[in-house]
Length: 101
Picture 1 (spheres, rainbow, N blue to C red):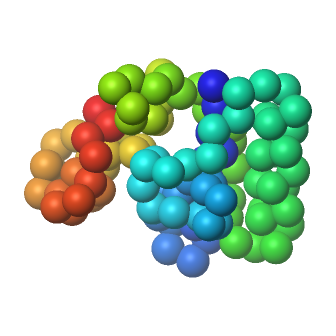
Picture 2 (picture 1 turned 180 degrees about the horizontal axis):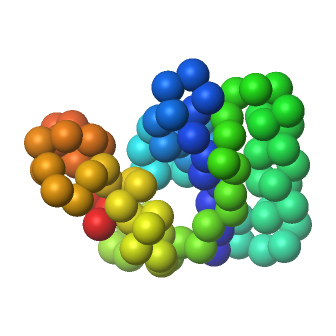
């Protein structure tokens, strides 16, 4: 399983693509379960990059754990949660944030 991630160009915020567009949390991200879905997400990422909406576009591996989308690589779990040295900053400081890391 894979999802599309990038950084929003206007402020550098890590974002993930969902059916509603780009969102700041991994929760609700659109999951590609096969090569066709992955190709679709790649096309969406390329179009958003070309439109100067996002940069550093990537397709990343994820797993579903207890219904939550969890990146398989540590780097991506950190991007989803926020800085590792301060729990009061980043996405993990938001009251509604799902802990990805």
